[in-house]
Image (cartoon, rainbow, N blue to C red; front, side, top):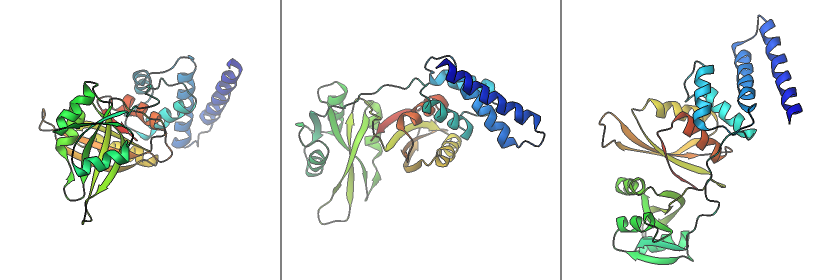
Length: 271
């Protein structure tokens, strides 16, 4: 381990010295060398790094914002060599009991999302969410989107109010119609294993959202949907809920980057 680290360090320094001696070196080559040196420096301690530690050292080392291509590249490199302290999540999310409102659409969603679960009927969606929050049921079913009406803001607010996480989704077709309703299976914890999409929410004036989408777009992550509504506590801010298609990026790597670059966000789900 020490020999490999010493060899890697020597190679980085040799490359940097060569660049320093080359008066025609491009800004890209210099930046690439700086990134390699930073990654090497951060990995030498042998301890797992938290998002706060990585972002703090980065802001001291680089004159650049955290929501940037450079910082995202660094997080991805650090993740690839397993030096980051990654948030642990449940390897298996239980869905042995499900809370839902007893109507034909919710019942159809239950059969698609957790057909073998013990079914607990509730008179309204808030009661179903409370049942999960207070651990009376493992999960609940909630509609989040309809092709006729768009996103359902009331239900997204319930998801956040009861700190629930989207773990699976399905669509239910309306009889004799082309319309569909998208339902979510909600649990108390998030599971990143095998996730192809991650849903996050945060308050913003719009500047960080644009930068975030530009950075992640360069990494192959594209938004599946963006939903927004005014922040109830600050009229100058907007609450954004963004679902990102991960492409070949690992969900835990993205989660670490968001924790470091955008600490005031909430992971709403991964599936």
